[in-house]
Image (tube, rainbow, N blue to C red; front, side):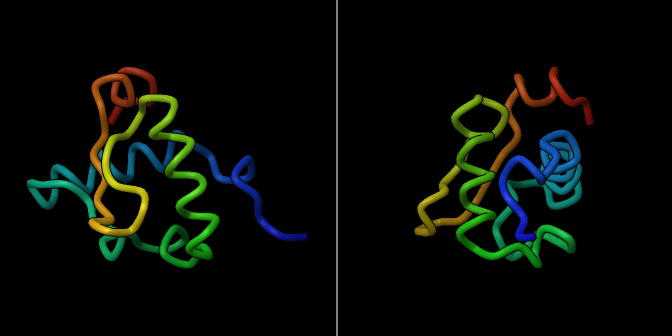
Length: 81
């Protein structure tokens, strides 16, 4: 059975981005992701990140030109840090 977007929990992923932003002091680029996220197929990863952007939990570039993400206030309020 293959992994789908619905199988990737939003909370831990948004919290990961929030924590990594604090650690790096800037946005989180695709190469900053660690397992299990770095092991996801690119198409699946971008689909999940796109859903989180559409819901307003993250902002950033999902097309691949920049490949960076930032947590939004809505994301912090919904999932904490």
